Length: 379
Image (cartoon, rainbow, N blue to C red; front, side):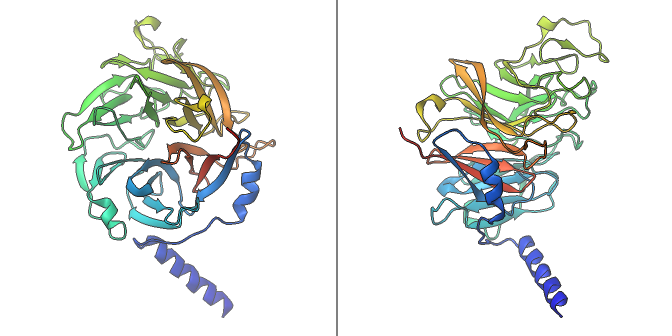
């Protein structure tokens, strides 16, 4: 009888997860051990802001502190809210289900935009209908459907256009269609679609530098050239038509042993910064807030998702890339510990989002949680 009750309760919980309604949830004690193993700089605190978000990846901020969360293979898009301002999200809404890797989410003037592998859709007046989301309106559906490097990052640029990217459908190859390995932009209504850069293997994170409004984007390097090559990249985009080297050159100066070309290294745009190989840099955000101490202002936080095929794992951290004017000059570890001393992976950070109070949210697709980082030290 007890087993039957347990099965019945599990079915109820599963049905609730599928139903588009708000759910109240709290930070489980099981995360306390993990939080203690994560290392943050002196004066900072780290907590679990939200959980029960399977595959949580890209984040975007809407009005009234609502955060939309895209996912990978799970196919869902969530909205979360901290309605009582206690530092923990207490409501969750399922906005969409059964989508094709809806990683990318962006918000503008009451409308949520979602990037699946093969299309971009919008959900109108979304904040008024969190409990009963509207049907999506397709604004663009001419993107390739290849799942390999298929998930899209999605952001609004300073020009009001939507930016995303189309990765290489392979580890190393020269795709026939021009749309692959590209950075693209389009109007929110789907018009004026334009390829603005090529030669980009796989970017799942970018942001515009405060002041200069220059676009910087992460790029994941080729596999199977060894543990320490090629470097993953942070690139700077300046002009339409730039070529960033893939598949002929990696990390600016490593010629691919399989792909041949008569072009020279100087024909391609080199990285603005080189990360260690295979750390998998994804989400990237410049810090614009005032909660953190002044040295963090206008510096770039990068989520390093972590290696999958390196003999000794690396990454699994939040890096801080330091800038001097318009160029990166150094890289520090901001948060680590998701990879323990025995090389056990405890979590995988994906994206970074600045909240109105200047704190940071960090998504973790392995655990399905979102962390919050606050500065509580002395000024």
